[in-house]
Length: 272
Image (cartoon, rainbow, N blue to C red; front, top):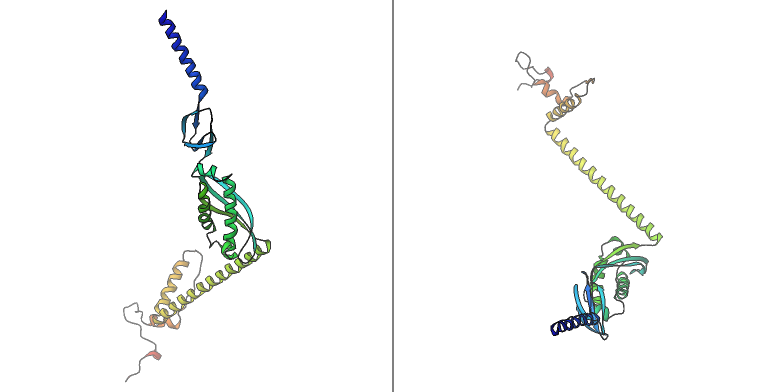
């Protein structure tokens, strides 16, 4: 009887302990890609990494922070170039929270702080350079802004991975001027390439003329080559004539009997 009563008391104590434990302790599960800040009486205690954690209910609170990469879009901002020309530039920023404690404790809203830092960096970087560099792409505006913004937001726990220029919008009159300038540049390049091609053709023709002048037989070979290519088409009739430059070849051709054909009387060499 005493043993039964003792076991009953033990069971009751265990049940009361489990109920008290459940009332005093709660389970906090932190998902992958997040961290949770633990506070006691409003003061920061530690960072809870992904996984399950036991936390006292009384006087303790938590704040979850997303540690994954995220994107911030800064729509068209009216800025002035070095020549005081107005244009609109839109920016996309890829960033992540590197230090959750600093991100939540140093600024009220770290996303708004990053947005403001990007706006100020954009205005300053665009104002330092002429419009032609900004439009032509010779200036890596995104890289310059990333270096500046990353240094500023590192103080409140953010890591800026990239800053990309999405669009540069010009006034209508400037767009027309740039289009005309680009058209003129392309036409000039086309004319230059045409002139280079004509010069190369003339050089080849001059070389061919010198070779024919040095070896007249090349003209005859070229004619035979042309005839060979044209003979593949049936129904063609060719009429050939020998020019004076080919006559020496005809004079030197041997007769059918084997004896050389004598040259005309006008071509006989004079006797000494």
